[in-house]
Image 1 (cartoon, rainbow, N blue to C red):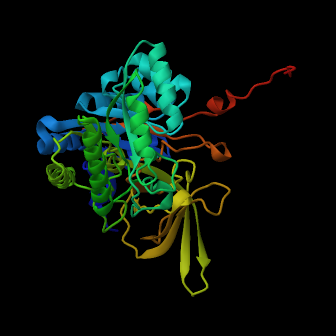
Image 2 (tube, rainbow, N blue to C red):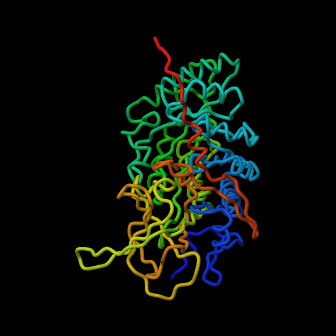
Image 3 (cartoon, rainbow, N blue to C red):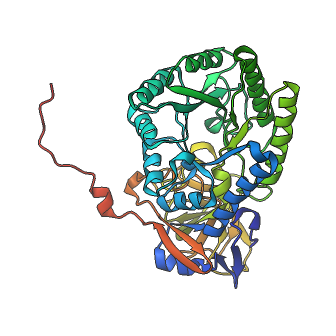
Length: 450
């Protein structure tokens, strides 16, 4: 069976028919930590984070802003420490994500707060600890952040999230820059300009720049080009009206990664070179200084670094209407630790990870153990016909949104996450226990509420 190096982490290989990640055998990891198991290649993570930082700095120099790791893709205290170590920033969008960053003693001047419906508690905490910027997403939030900053006696730096009216070539559920979407201020409707004027009227807000994010898992450049062009045009209109220039342009993230054969992960150097060429050209056209340029990769950093290891529990053959046979391979996880295939048809690859098989492959469907027909990890894949209970299956590129979107559906326990490097492995998130699940249940005497 083919090993697909383009979708596995950089320190993954096959040795004697067995998958080895970061010098650790899949069978040894499964025996030590159980399955399902998220295995993060620590060196790969840091290498990718540093590559994005270097690419931004190489192409923008003194005008390089900040690489913000989009923590929604996956975050833990240890991950936040790795991010801090590489010198990049972190983008949080809830109080919980901020709490994890603070627990890791992450430098608050490298934290950016996002979110389309931030609570007053979340905003107050962000202002209190001194986050670098708050990305404002609605007219109500302008008043809210200004009022809470005033109460704290601070002037809060903010960006405005702009909706540039771009249809990104990705699934509707992860496309975020067209007009009919919950995020940001629309340029076309005029609300973006109103928001700019409103922020400038607020004594406790400092408008640093503009932000956009067109979506996730983007490979085509057209959306980035159009969005960047429209925001620089808006920046030129701002300069003409107010006689000074905005300091920063945050271009968001969404850079695609390889999940299956034939796909290629965005190359940071190539991506930043193309962005730099466009930004410099558009700024020159509008006679603007080049602002600080920031980006927010998340999936592009953590996605390829992580592999999920499952154990096969059952197999069965189903005769299809066209005369073919399909092998159903059920593993000990499913949609509770990888909802993406069920949520928006995400595709993955997989390999037999625990041994060599020389038998022919058979059309297979990799499924989970949940009480849903839609609990499918991979809808169609050729896998060896002798796969049987006890075998290990490895699904690569699961670092982004796997553990982050995990649930306890069917009261499944969320898997452990381990970091591997140079033949060593350590827990960074332990596996949940049944006691964890039961700890939230409360037996309380009813109270009268008036």
